Image (tube, rainbow, N blue to C red; front, side, top):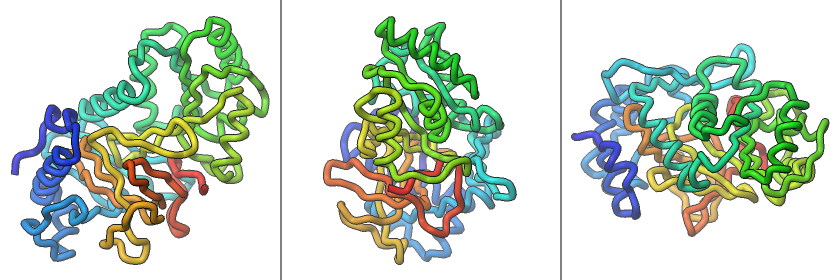
Length: 328
């Protein structure tokens, strides 16, 4: 089976194209990803009988902690690792062609937000900057660079400098994007208050064990008040994926055309749920072609009829991870 190429994946414009490409990716990875092949063999899956995305088996995300999940024999270019508390086994995403990731997040940003060069990009991601292997930092560095704005950049704990920069952007009335890990954004607004209605605040999730978890409504209300904005944007992504979904408020996410969310029964992982029912989130990420495009996450969610979805937290027995979602 021939692997789908970038042009095929990133030109998807309808459900039929998505389905055809997903089924092609499934058959390719069923042959070329050793751990996925073993997984579907143990399930006694008849590959030829898989004729819809709902019939595709989804690999439990925990396999990224114990196996090399690869569908390519090419040399690994970069290894992305998940964050976690001391003593945890972190996930490892081996990426043999990082240009797939670059193409995915660049196209997705353009789709949801427009030309990156229109923005000043500020990144408040201290916990990610303090370790190696963060896919979020890889993306943020690229966005900062491609913004071609001399005021774009990263901030650790220098909140006073960030506040001064936000004031500067506010006075200049320039489009500004602030990407921040949740606990750092909360710490910032506890020290500084600003009324910047034009600011896009994008929280990436995660308290990192540093603060008590908050329900999404309480978190976003606090951040809206602190930054003077009407809504808080969010990103749904993780180490094991090469694509992200975005929310422009109210915790409702939309996927780029090469990514899709399906929910499964929490008691029977092989049963797919209808829309508007809460279940485990399965992700189809066709940019993940050299790894595994079909991932059963440990997140809970609900899909709506228009294809958007809501992330509702995590399974109780899941590990706490750096990109974990707030319980809503």
